[in-house]
Length: 199
Image (cartoon, rainbow, N blue to C red; front, side, top):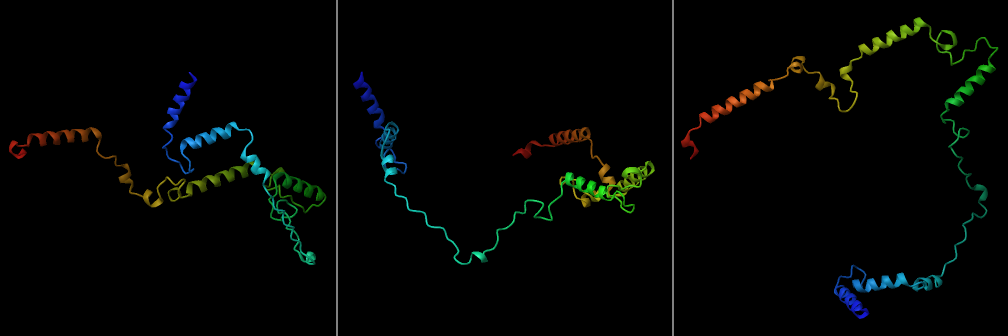
């Protein structure tokens, strides 16, 4: 049985002898045996190669001699509010700053808080001012030329939308009439065909 198994595996692997090398300079059978051998072996050439490695020492650091005082200072981080004047103030910081400002000017009669935008109590608009603002916004929205403005890129440009309204309302010929007309034209074409024109 064992001899038959060895013979069968030899015959099976004999097809690999004349196979291409796939860029490894070894046939497929040689590569297979090397791969199987390296998978089975516990210690091999790689351990010896690692033991024989020689590491070069790291070069020494470059230090400026005598010019240490002339070196530029390290750049300060701009990722915080203290070092960057253009840093955006958070809503919490704005609220805190305005409250502190209002507390500091509590006894100043000329101080007007920026929180008070309207003329009503606590910065709120009065009822009549709200209605007036609503009417003005509505009138502005109605007077805007909507045809000149595109809400998305899929809408056609204004010059294409300014077509004649008569053309826009024209729906064309109804489908039933088109079908009747086509059938009539087809029957007329069939009846007018003459047998000698076929040749």
